[in-house]
Image (tube, rainbow, N blue to C red):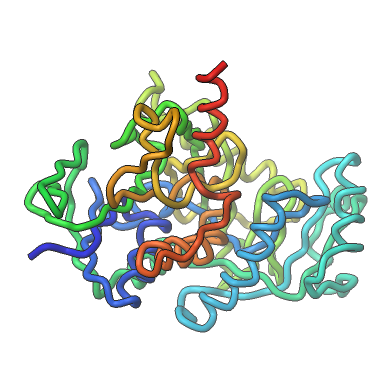
Length: 361
């Protein structure tokens, strides 16, 4: 069998684009070297929230994606999302103006926080400006990834090479007409000098606590609303640790302590018991926007743009993977199946044009 599309990488991006392609009538093979949601996606806090800043391309993209993602998960994967209001505090004094600007310009539904939402909040956090949104969510990260691809053929295989054989690509025993690369910040399968991805190590802990939290809380870390006395806290960002290049293993206890210390600045947690740690590598781009679309062949494109034949990518979502994935995966699916345009702000070619200017100097 020759599949219409082979998707390499079974994190949230790979699972989401597989879902949309399957729904568009494509036959899909999903490939990962370890398993579904086995890396950074499985360790994600998976909080569905907007970006709290004054403005800019990234904020505009995330705000659109946030609204789309809430509707997508609640309508299609109800069992894998828990919704609650969101209480977001400024971290420092210099962030107060950002939140004030957000409240003045945002079209999202917000209001003053009710007294019960503030009962568990620390005195320190209450000193700062906040935004109270009426709706946000926390997704079961691994659960929703598995649910997205439950009807899709999945293969465990480490992909290091794409071999083109006429009208299809060969990956091990798998044959596919088109390829989507969604393999995060690990070693690139196609190594282009203009594509630079940063590895961001994530850590989430699930705890039990006698503290009842009625809202999702964001400040130094994200803290979920209580569900049967269980709370999720995540995720720290460590740009210095990379599982493939770091000399020392990740210190789980140190990461856990950091999460709890940061959470304590926002909420008064009592009777804490650690239930489980989740860790994994996520990827971010140099301009913090994702890379979604066709890939330019740089060696052949200094005078005229040439793309790799039927190869696409979806990557670089950073800490907003579960917010961005439905919105950008749908765009990529439509680009592949109907040749719809992809937003220029997320197209990988934007980095090539910058690279091209430097090469011509």
